[in-house]
Image (cartoon, rainbow, N blue to C red):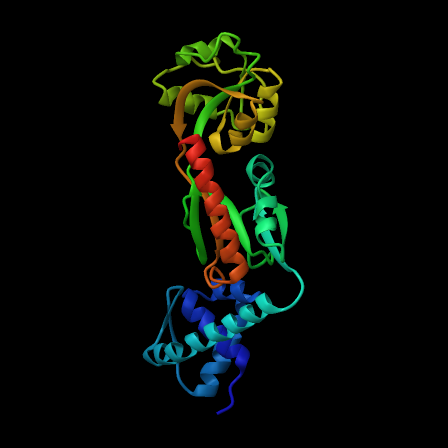
Length: 299
């Protein structure tokens, strides 16, 4: 019985994702197009493949039988295409998305080491603050801060940063501060939402009267670190962001108190593509680099 290959592919993606919308993202088409393909397949086979109730879609008994036969076959096709791409002559392109701050403060200074290890893989880094959509943006790997749970994505934790207080060495001529209250003797530099200092002081056991935390604010850790290194005041930043500037002596830790952040940085990839050679090589490499950073910062 001849059936439509696109309809079979749409069926497998809906079965794997449990969602027409997510399957559409995987395939790069509209949910309506996926639904049409499923209806066409059910018509061609003469059976109902999904139960649809209250926006939920589940495989029927017949659908489970078909999915069990088709899913491994499509996985084998994907593996064969990926294997061919890995063996073909010429460089591969690996598209990586991250935030401007993470790229500027951590990734850019290290990416050359990946290129030396894997000279046939050309890395293209794209920066944005937008929520990650690897499929729609044709990207291979994302690096994002969050709880580690993104639907349809495979996430590997890199590190969970801590909030630290940094300053120019020239500002702290008498050495590091000893008590949180000592910070109030210096100008305070703030993040965009003006909340990091409040979080740090509260976690350090100090309550401040309203209006105490004045001073200029900056949109990200990159500019906060630059402002602190220029001697403008003390800044609360993530230790991962500050790792290179601390190592170079551009800034120093102003006081030993550090505060954990609730989430972490993760390397993420589409669940069906995490096994692809170039993606696996990049994630193995960045995990190794993250481990080195953790050891140095003791986070």
